Length: 117
Image: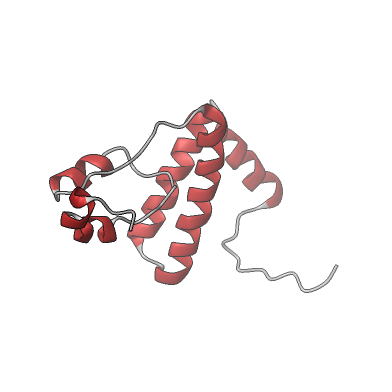
């Protein structure tokens, strides 16, 4: 058997470890430590960070689709803010672009469902 003495004594701890490989909020490692855990983590390079931001956005959208809560909407907005910062999108320019699209094409307030065109 590959478990040494130390591993056998700490088998319960080993069983509780869960693999995530996902982007988490900045304070999550400290939270895990405060609960007695020992997070294994690394700092992503830009390429990995961009990929994980996209995965996190999809994760948060899926969670919102299930729960439809303000907390899940806040999580989506947090990821969108992180994406905007990473892509160096100017927040004023982003708002102007949003407003221009709304002026040109409208919003989604009228609940229009296009069936055919």
